[in-house]
Image (cartoon, rainbow over all chains, first blue to last red; front, top):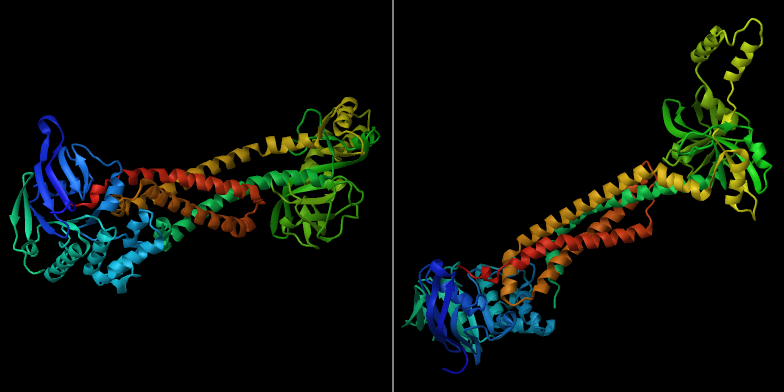
Length: 236
Length: 401
């Protein structure tokens, strides 16, 4: 494992206090290397979403350590002051539904992130178009999200997650609304992109269709993770 | 950086335009209300300007002739004319009544003017058609707003008048068009009763032993004759000589004639400060209510639009959009809505409402500028609720669970 990717050690999250306190994460350890795609699997209420929100710097953990790339971002407290900039520049998000901004065309949906980071519009758009070629949606660059199919929308959402070349991408059930063929196509794309851009990808899923594609799987139950070797079929 | 507000507006332009048009109609009404107030003030000023007077001499301790009734003898003008500093004087009467023309009648301010020449106090200063009154009886000059045309026959009380001239912007402070007729006719119109009433009055006078004394046979005839004439006018209009101060001449008339005299400034204060004060307060209340309603509409629309974008806002926040960008998105939309509304409102007020209002609507550029600033401020304030809702959105909402 290089110094990039993401590593978490003993991550804890407690909601509430006193008798009503709920320990959602009880010391989670996880490590994902650059270019690796891992699955995070668990039943409802197991702590998947809480872990994803902690990893995404959306909620503050109660303790533990998180290292993103070479940077310690959490060590019993945030070590970065601007969490928005952290999310914008170092973490990519792919959601269950694409959640594209309906009033921006495909290119600007993706180029918005670098624009928010202060990159000139032309350069940001050029980066987006470059990604579209890899994701085979370059012909839809000027379309509005409502004009795309579900699979195309999800590929644009993947492009948005990748556009700032983050060390880690968090994908929250990205294949849930897709049929088997499209779901596997999306996972193939994520694997390709992970390798191409040296990005660590964590995919939270229930989807039985895609679980066999992971080489490594983290099971989470009652706030604790268990690592398991996956079958890793199909994408070598 | 692209304009998120602009893109959102372009994406849902129909919604924005229709909402803006609706808001614009409300703003148009608001601007028209302000225009009506300005029109009332202007009508008052025009009434004073067009009277051609520097001083108004009226019955003692009254606010006449426009705000209260006033009666002074119709020969008072002669003695005032001889006073130092007085260049011209003229009797004038004002009577607001229904003037009939054929089957229709028009509410008008019938103004009695002394024989003289154009430019004399009280005379209409200019005509747009026809000529001034040249005969002592039964001719009239009417304001265009009355709808009368040259040659029309008007009925005022029992007498008929021919419209010989048309003037414009000659209206009372209440917006009623003025109709000028000879002074003697106007005095008669103020006083004249119908035949039955005259007969009744003569009978009662004849039955009164105080007036019908056998020893004084001419007394009854004299009393009846005095009851049949009207020696009063409402005011004497005074034009002062150049080089004399209006206030000094007014003071002199007050002192020696024991009448009340108003200067132009005082008369303006009576018209605007007293006569149209209630109307002005009503209009001000309407303006406040319409502003509150406009603000509520903008707030509701922007809040609804924002609630419809909660998921997008959560995504924007999650991917690192700054709060000020989201605040800008909402506030710019609110202001854009206000701008659409203002443009529609201004066009509506100017081209649609002002021409069809029965009252004069004066839309002053400064009022439009104030209105524009008010719309922007209202839109900014109205967006606060939506901004508050947007800033409360948790970026975690974009992530399931």
